[in-house]
Image (cartoon, rainbow over all chains, first blue to last red; front, side):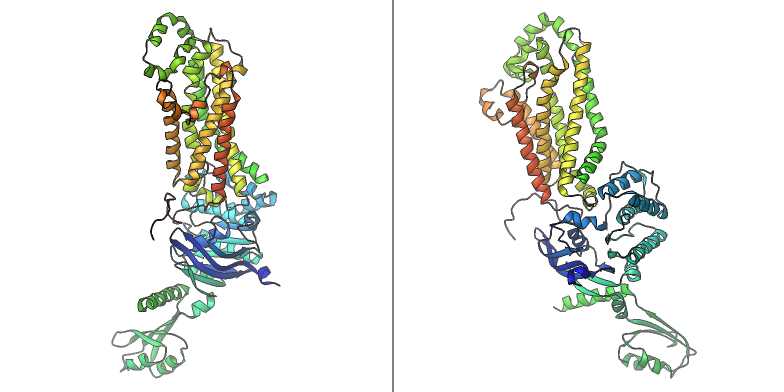
Length: 312
Length: 283
């Protein structure tokens, strides 16, 4: 199969400038068919700009962009037909009902009775009142309309820009379930979020964007694995412990030592083998380990970047 | 084409209250104004010397040399009714034209709508045609009101077709201002500035056109005012050239707006500033 057939989104050296401000500075990545791809970055990093280029809502300054095998600038309608989009800041005409809004979106998609049934099912699942006026809805309920509109036509590609923003935890869970179900149904999901644990729970791969540049594209598991392991050791009774021994171990950092050297907190990068062997010499009452998640890996990544920038 | 009709229907439906909100006052204006001619006709002997005695500058605001025409049925309707319509509908055009796309863009609605599989052409022309229909609806309600007013007046006797003629000119000048506001909203930094600029053109045009009836030096400037080509007294016969001229400009403004919309980045908050497109003089 050709590269284009596999890649549902293909971005190469994409730039976007607003006057003197460069929002995207030559980003590049590929999203393969059927995967859930996380797009991480702080506010103003360029996540939304990249997504909006994919739908031809804004035009890139340069670079190559293919979405579902097509150039969005040349075939915007064909691209949008096969995509579901949920923007980060979702607003509607406030004076209409939920049903009217969804009916309009459905008609724009040329959706028939199957699309209507799916919209009804989704509305029911998300507990969305179809006869309520939009202006009377909370932010979270307005977000639900966007979710129904994005999923109702069972698109080939879902472009979700912070989809769970403003939703309560239960509905967040429902949305994450919908994302997984869409993937199982063969859809590809491009997912930007600030909630890193959320991305970690569903995304197979992640791109990290900062200041309009992709700083890393990696498997979520790989990024998480790069995080340190936090170890908390409680000894059975105070002993004469040689703290320097722990600090000298390769990849081990002593974070804290308290209660008369009875409790140790350590951070381990890499293998635990040397630490376990050293601990075997002491009467260990309790040992707790916790692998840092994507969130810590993400922050560590930024700290490293900041450190490098500081050195320069 | 299907998406064009969907957008047209939805936009027209959204404009229903606008049509009623602007059309009903026009209907009432016609209904109330026309029967007043009976009073004017009755009091012509007292009123004529007052109007004839007015200074030219003052007279220019009630029709200039045509001010005495107020004593004829056609002249009364032209001066006391149709003379106000371009201002009223010019303001409507400034608000509705500038808001046709820029309003939804500024409110962040357009972004989500355009992510659906409808081309920008469908969006633009669907909404433009709906706005044109709304304008026809408003003018139509005004026509009904005036016709009913004429029926109420004892000394007025016009067939509905004759009353319709000035509305053709009203519609042309309203489309001129509506499309001007639309075109300006595509180049100016915000909807409000486009509406304000169009409103300024409406009012400045009205003042210049009226003053030019008394001040000869303003005649050249008045040639550039769209209101100079408005025919309030078209019940005596409509000149088609000025109507076509106004419609040609409306078409030109629409095409400019379309070009602007076609090449436009649909903006949302945080996507860059809302600045005038002045050239950058320094880095």
